[in-house]
Length: 368
Ligand code: GLY
Image 1 (cartoon, rainbow, N blue to C red):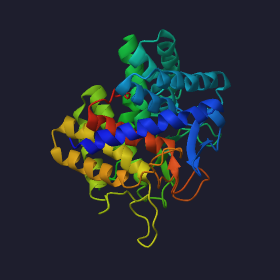
Image 2 (cartoon, protein in one colour):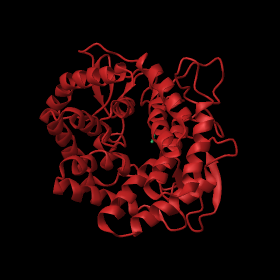
Image 3 (spheres, rainbow, N blue to C red):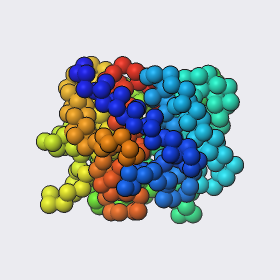
Image 4 (tube, rainbow, N blue to C red):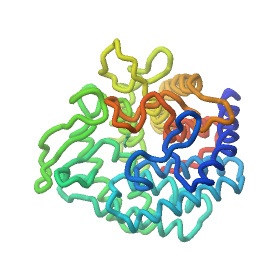
């Protein structure tokens, strides 16, 4: 593998070794950087769904070089995240993202018993969101009892993990119910996926699709496509069910056909041609998913597409050592929701680092 990927990983780790100190000094979990400085989440404080990506970055760096600074910084953030168990009301299905990549990573890499217990706690919270009519409830709003979203495919790994750890099949059964519903209801004939589907919470009957973070109702929000691509790949890796592998391949084929000539990713694959809206986070997630899918399916073309994406991302990096954050041109939502457009957002950095770690042979595969 070309040395530039290892070199990029080392440079990013070096930047984080320097700039993470600023987050620690303020006891915050960075969400993004603005004018070169860390900013915490614009919504819901430490309950915001992205909090786990900061410790996840630290664990990626720790897995590569065992620098105790990164372990300490991950554990500082884990303390803030596990305090949210007691606040509870803001937590939603994204406890998968929040805790599998933080305390779950800690348990995986260090065997810490409290981290293991905290990860099981998070899995039980996710399990508590199962509607036996066939889906995991995404959010908490009074009118959202029937909402399920494609992003949740990534959270299912926490449930599969819990079944492996405890020998209790309930967690995996819950994950399977949701994955089967997503397989049936979210994937469109052309391989694109819907973002939000509302079901009748009593019967599980599909009611309607809602517009989400993409361009419009029925369009193809690229990060949603990436969550589906990587999420179904993980469902395959967790279960060996060939239906999930085939779903991942259909979504991947659709995604790969939409990678721009410069290797970047439009925020929505149906956005107007004259509107330049990039979401590099989607490209970074898809690169990770495509590398795993390439191995799982034995299809080298997926790896080649992943490399096109990574090369595009490396052209969009902020390398100045004093400025916080690395990957630029990240967009939280097509229609600005205040969470950031064409800027650095920490989970973009996380997936870029995960992709580079895969290419460098150091990825601890925190999702399994
Ligand atoms: N899971 C929410 C998002 O991707 O923005």
